[in-house]
Image (cartoon, rainbow, N blue to C red; front, side, top):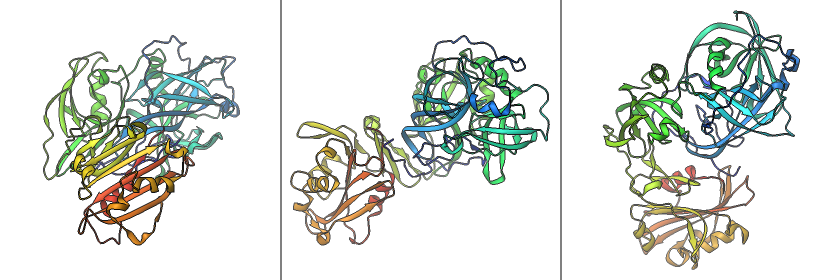
Length: 557
């Protein structure tokens, strides 16, 4: 996958629980504090056999040694907005699941699959065959999902019967840390009924156990000595080696509904409770990473990056968990009309409407003290304000992003053209784009990514073109520092940059022009970032330039 992930930053002063998700990040992405990937939910209802937790059938796994054959690795790929990383484009996250019916019905966690664009599944650790799968039903609050794998005749697991006691031997099975090799860890049940409240789910109680789980184990089974399912692994606290699974008794009633195509305690969002401040003003709610098409949230016009602030008048997330959110959902039918208030984080506007009712409409702005939200009037390229005076901006296709000073609010995310031909994607941001284009003494930035230019030369030739008379002609209007070129390497991208000063005459602006390629993509595309800033001492990279370089992201072409 050809993308760079933003270095983590807090758009809110988020107070999160130390308990963490057990799903694995993309093979190249930096994992957020609380991870989530999603898949669009189908509207059709699939008729499948009901769960039989005790009945033994010929196709069922008969021992712990055979359990591997019914356990799956899941890659869920999609685009979502994370409260710490911002926009993630075409990110693939890895988790585990297990088959409960020979027709390919499998169980995993909601946070593994909900809201992503596609699912890839490998069965029993066999990487030679990849299957597609679709989501049948999800539960946001129980953190459970049921998927249907293409094909049939699969080995499957059955549920353990009898009581689950402290001291019972258990085994956590799955594919942690993105490893395609099957992993089994042994432990015992430490607590029969530990608290199940977290910032991404709300379960009455869960099993605490000592069978070590790691990122990537999410959705995998907690097994008995006989290879029967005791629970569904979903979280862990690595520091204290505490591991948690949704108990069979909590999971089964929900799973039986999900496999029929019915969602449970869900409005169609992949969310995480956030609790922090904007300036000096407290802010709480459920941050929306993504929205399922056709869901009640989608029909109300809730968007990724919104904060669901109130549901039926209840302020959400005040304790840092999803408890209040889920209590409201569980007290109403899925088709009930519910009032909802959303904070649109791009400009801190307050939107009010209804789930299963009227769409959101602007009613005002979130009141704050000592903080200014960014209002960007450039449509789809409007930014996400951070806690450091910068805003995230995105091109019109959602392929590239970066952070710029909040007062660079004139943003254009149109395609990159050269001699009337589109050559890639681009963002221009400045206090005034026209001034930035017309004068060498105006601040602003251009960020472009192209795979057309990559066909005719490398990043050195690209840099020569851009700084010369056929490009922005910095060489003809500025002083070229030391007559030399500087190396650039941030661990993900490598390239060269030029530094110019005295642009537009004595006392003018400085300009930094960077051309680079992704180390992973081997030059499949080239990026250019040109920044003009007020004149400095010429010794150090300007703070604005460094911030832009630290936060640019390129998605897949």
